[in-house]
Length: 189
Image (cartoon, rainbow, N blue to C red; front, top):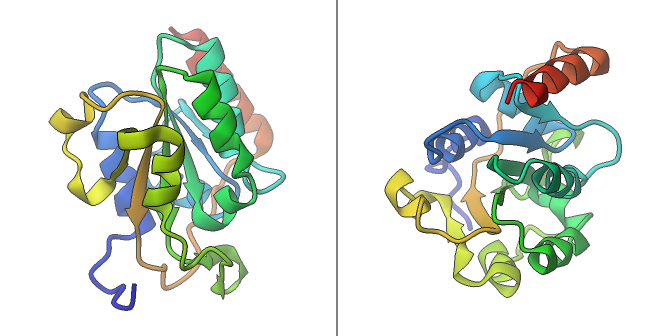
């Protein structure tokens, strides 16, 4: 993909994916830029900003989906992060949670490391997602809220996004604050 200037930002893609749901899903973001852009897209106590090893949003979201079967869960992963945990896609496909989706934001770089290209920059993420989830892997640019309701779960949404001109905004929350807010939101329902 040579012309990236007409692509949405990560923040816009995350906002658009969240807007596909009739009710706010739990959102689990990967460490780094996805965490910053999720918060910028709309802080919510149902957001779980994962820190620690890169690539764990999909695994953490699978666990959350298992313990919250009546709630929708959206894992937000960058292309570099998901590449570090591709086996989670096989686990999710095998577990078949009816309430889990993955938003893959593909900017072809490690945004937090001064735009170092990802080794997956030429990977066809739609084909990868379809290998695991069939037609339940869709492009964000082709999705509407009405169409999204008919997509089987587990599902994967591929969003081609423009590299950000700078680093994402700082989270401004400590791990203790994130934990307290998320636990409060988890108990509320």
